[in-house]
Length: 372
Image 1 (spheres, rainbow, N blue to C red):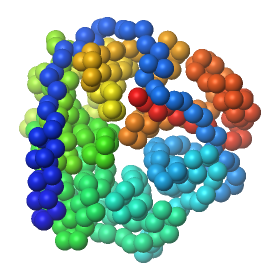
Image 2 (image 1 turned 30 degrees about the horizontal axis):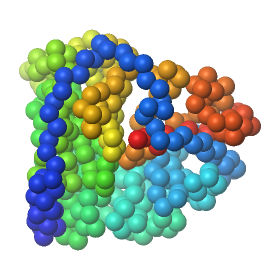
Image 3 (image 1 turned 135 degrees about the horizontal axis):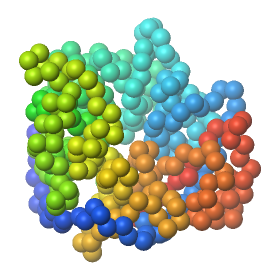
């Protein structure tokens, strides 16, 4: 509890310096001409080493930390570690039921305050490894939370969990081994119509969350008061309560309150005006990707000039980010060395790295955007 009080005092100081941005109406039907170089400071290419010890099937998460890249492959349940140049260092491959093993890893993160790798098992276990992949400990989490889906370190003693539960967020004290606070409660209708997963991002060492409400509020979850720091406003294309209710009624039997069917993403998009995906914030931009009228769009709000850019892809054919983002870094995983947009954005030296890549025998290479 002392940690929460300290956080609250710090947050009062922060709130004294920062005010919530006014919600400027974003015209989702606009499609601006934008260059990737309007959005990034630099672009780099990393070719991941390939050998029998590091054959990657699918990249679900990339965490850059201390000049290393920690890569999580959920299909294999393995965490691979490469240096910043793509040289393979080690892996954590501990699937099993032993004391230092995990049955099913669904989320991986770095505790930046204690320099530890966190591997989360959704039904209530958190495994700690040091930054070189050595097992440290296993924590059994409180059973009062039915599903643990994401984990973030708030400080040296406090973890933040995001869950599919109706109470979507929780603070947990490592030293006290208990849940300090459960919050972000949503209605039963919202619980089954809007996902809280992949809606969290890091900016200046704080954790922010897009609550996917009617007006898309951005909350600071490192502040225990959870203030709203930004509002997205899409005018006539804001989602309405009746649309969320329609999604719920389409899936659930009113008498039994049980799910009778599951809507496809296409069916969801037929009901909703927009579907927010991933958020990013940098020193210059507040940004959001979303589905609108069956296609993905990117919005970059310039925090200094108070205007925005909105587009489907850049003039070079590049998408500025997807779901593989960390702070102001966006990763594009690529196996196709002939992708046209690469020709338009890479230097000659980078093209040489790409052209020597063998997509059938090698791990994918990474195109890395450092956003402004």
